[in-house]
Amino acid sequence: MQRGMIAVLAVLFFLALTPTGRCGTFVLKSEAEQTRLMLELRAQQFLNRATFGATDAEITTLADSMATLGVKEACLQWIDTQMAITPTLHVPTIRSFLATDLITNNADTTQNLTRYRYYAWWHNAIAAPDQLKQRLAWALLQICVIGEGGNDFSFVEPTVGSPDPFWFGVSSYYDVLLSRCDDRYLDVLTDITFHPIMGVWLSSVRNPKATATTSPDENYAREIMQLFMIGLNELNIDGTYKLDANNQVIPTYGNEDIEELARVMTGFNYAGASTTNINSGNRNYNNTMLMVPTSHDNGAKQLLDYQKLDGSQETGTLAASTDGVQDIKNGVKLIYGHPNVAPFISRLLIQRLVRSNPSKAYISRVATVFNGSGDSTKGDMKAVVKAILTDDEAWESIQMTPLQSPWRLDVTSGGTEQARLVEPVVQYASFVRRFGKTNSTTGNRFFLPATPGTWNQAPFRSPSVFNFYSPLHQPAGGLATAIPSNNIPNGDLAAPEFQIITAVVANAWQNRSRTDVVAESYAHTSGTAANTSYRIDFDFSKEKFSAGNVSLLIERLDKVLCNGVMTDDFRNRLNRSITRYVPQTTANPSSGNPTVSRDRDRVRGAMITVMNSPFYLIRY
Image (cartoon, rainbow, N blue to C red; front, side, top):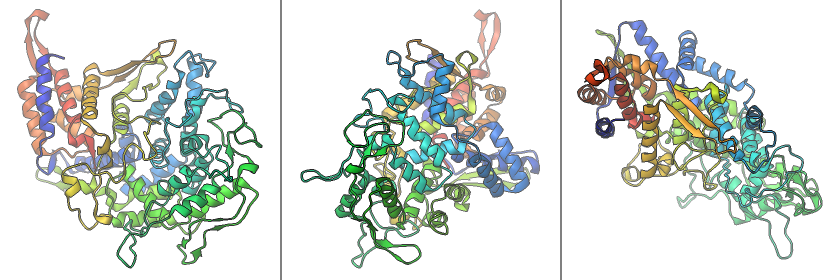
């Protein structure tokens, strides 16, 4: 790109960060056009949360359904349809890709085949038909966290009882989340407890019962309570802290509870390994761990005691048992009965899908659905997802006011409490889903490396059990000292994703968006022995079609990238800048033509600016 154009883009980028007015206006031709725009913006708002990014075709289909059924009913039916789709699993996807590329030895260490786990993740996030399950599995992965930095994950050893090498393990774990995201949350917890990747990540595999000189490892016992189920402090149904007689928070568990649950989590060995010696046999990262009966603590355990939802008291006693597998399942189920599970997990799921700061009322409504009508329905993921995505409050972040004389639509975005910064992985998947098309020479597959930029985030690469960012993170500055409304539980605003947005990440995102828009493609080399190059092309034809009229171009970008929340002030500034610095045509006598169209440069400048503006990076 010409140096002058880069300078213009720098000016436009800073304009994107300038605080401006409150709303933007779409001028329309008729009431029918006004109504249709409202439905399309609502459809896009919903799909941007329920998928890895809305596409034009999906918006059209859902908007049509909304026109017939109403907004909420159309979304409920969409969820039913999505949940009925068989999940697109990652391990079979990897096998298929390897076969397509004529790789018959998936354990070959002379090629960088481990990249195929990322290829499968990105391809399914972008192209899989079960978008809701793919999106929900990503949310669950950030609650029930695992990463590739386990203490022996990189240990290469022949895998017994599995057709796949060790590096399939994280994909196998992800498939558990995909397979269980339409069941109960209890089913999710039970399956991940028995998965070897979790066993490695939180050291529950080859964890023997106590001896005279040793104690069971406590990692998994601690984290399944703190992070996966109940949190540190007792909660009311609306996510507020319960307080004792001294107005202090009440811890949900203590060291004794961790020690007792650690006794439950004993006796695991890898699938195919020894059932008599917990330290014997090969590692298997893909199949359910087995039980070594002599290494499991069969004694009675005293876990949490709490008041159940029906008012009765849970004593927390696990009877002595010689069945180690059932003992572990019973232990997980006992903790799952704690009343904290519903508000704690509901808040985390709302944060991952809708907004960073759900209100007390929002949490309460979702948590009530989470609790269901008893043990058999508690944590029904389909019901919980419906409650989160179609709650009345979920729509309030974008207000639309239809006006006439002339026909127009005013769009107003909500404030800090109603928004969330979109994490880089989701933002880029959304961009590729909207504009990307695969190249037939590389099998029509969306192959991307672990991360297309230095973003502090990539599939399967959480740096710790605390995820890429804390759900309670507050950036330094105004947010940490801001006084939120009384609607927010416990009085603390959070902005989790900002924890990973450093100056390096912000610059990397700007470079990624500029490079992709200018090249109209993303290309990378596989790094395998075959050294295959892959490319994703981007189709900006609709944007180029509008480039002759800068107002129409900006309006198009507002709709497809910002869900209509650009302010009129920002639109006007961007319009003036493009019109002044990027005229529609420019003289170029040396080319043999008196003038050359600058439509492509207009699209480039406008798109790069918008993609680095808060109107695109913040989602309402």
